[in-house]
Amino acid sequence: EITGGKYVIIFGIAGSAYLIALAIIHLLVPRLETIEDPDKVTVSPFSLGSLLGFGFIGFIMGTFGGWCVGLLSNLSGQELLQDMFIGALIGAVIGIVVGNLLLKMGRTRAA
Image (cartoon, rainbow, N blue to C red; front, side):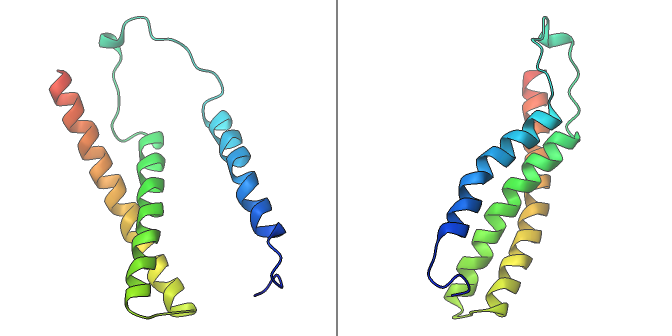
């Protein structure tokens, strides 16, 4: 409604999202190197990458969950946005906790 039925802005944002994500990945990991002996490498489950990655996935899933709950509750406008925001926060926390538990379980099985 705000754009007057023109989708150029929306598609521009959606189309540039990949390039922005790629730029962020290149900023976080400027160069990749092969590991010669993977058994000697220690991995910290609570690294910045795992927190951001699992938190982001939880954020996206939580936003979707909040949207679904809001729609099933016949909410619209600010109320729907509030449900999506609450779902995003809950999803981010759950994503971080579950993701790090999965990392810990994977480390104990490998050991």
